[in-house]
Amino acid sequence: MSVKIAPSILAADFSNLERDIKYINESKADWFHLDIMDGVFVPNISFGMPIVDTISKLALKPLDVHLMIVEPDRYIEIFSKLGSKILTVHYEACNHLHRTIQKIKSLGMKAGVALNPHSNINLLIDVIEDIDLVCLMSVNPGFGGQTFIENTYKKISQLKEIIENKNIKCLIEIDGGVNDVNANKLISCGANVLVAGSYVFKSGNPAFNIEKLKRF
Ligand code: DX5
Ligand code: ZN
Image (tube, rainbow, N blue to C red):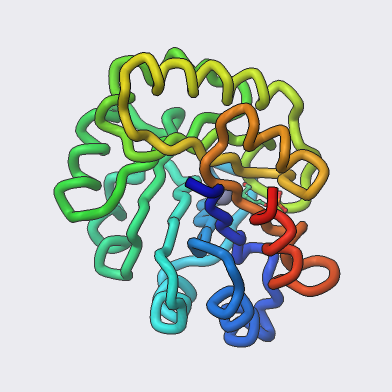
């Protein structure tokens, strides 16, 4: 299976949102990655329901929604109604992660769990069989355009080993600072999904940048 590319809309030009969504629709990208930040779990606020609704109406590919918010259970249902296909919550934001995962899946979405750079892979050992996707944060969440944290490679390999040993289908997604310099190594360590914001939107042609990541 070739690597999936999920461009992060956080890096799009919001004054030309329809155009940028069209770029992704017409590119080789696989998903739309939507970063929802509440200013509490992370020190930044991004965008909310009206923008997700707009994107949902224009997007021709699955919405991969990354909730960087406290108490995400409050919003699972609404993101399902807004068309989220993959809904990712943070391990660090959930007191009852198992229950949260079941709730996401009961609404027909794929359940993702994100781990901050400081959180050990083994924290997921008792729920990994219930998770469809683990999002390894390769920057501290909250902002686009940050530098990739090198320790991520080790975490991918550790997670891949667990997934293989258990013979399960959980996807490994990498989020933050992904570009054409680190993509190859990320994939060889075991990454299945690459989120890329700045690399896709901030210079040159998004479709070409996506194709470059897809070629590794
Ligand atoms: C960070 C977000 C990322 C971010 C990625 O908190 O979760 O998805 O938008 O942006 P780049 O690729 O610019 O690091
Ligand atoms: Zn994200």
